[in-house]
Image (tube, rainbow, N blue to C red; front, top):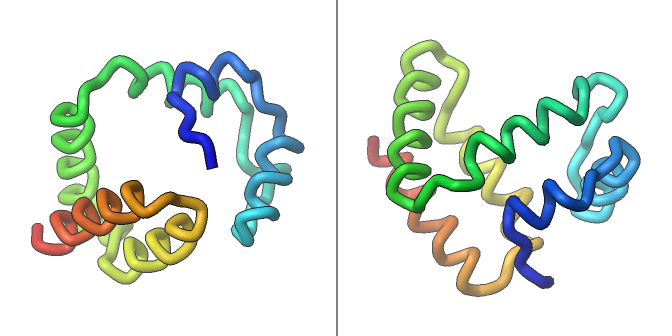
Amino acid sequence: MTKRSLRQIKKEKLSKEDIKKAADKAGINCDVENMGDISSLEETIEHYQDKDEDELKSELLDMVEQGKQDGTFTDEMLSDFVSNVSPMMDKEQKSRLKSIADMLKSK
């Protein structure tokens, strides 16, 4: 699988149907009719595209901490996410994901 940057994904202007096809291929249940406007996805990409790895990790840790406090994030949810996305990753990406997941679980 070829790695793509957020900038490349943004330029591709994915449709809801493109997202649905990718999710189906990955075995992920994706309700595109209720996922909102694609522009919100583009806004999210724009928000994160220029951040370096340390900034991303810091923001992720803040989000996880808040989610654990308000009950919207659990270690089980994280494990499910890792199980769903890791088959789409190469060995290096899986290793980094495991490292990040372990970091998040220890917080």
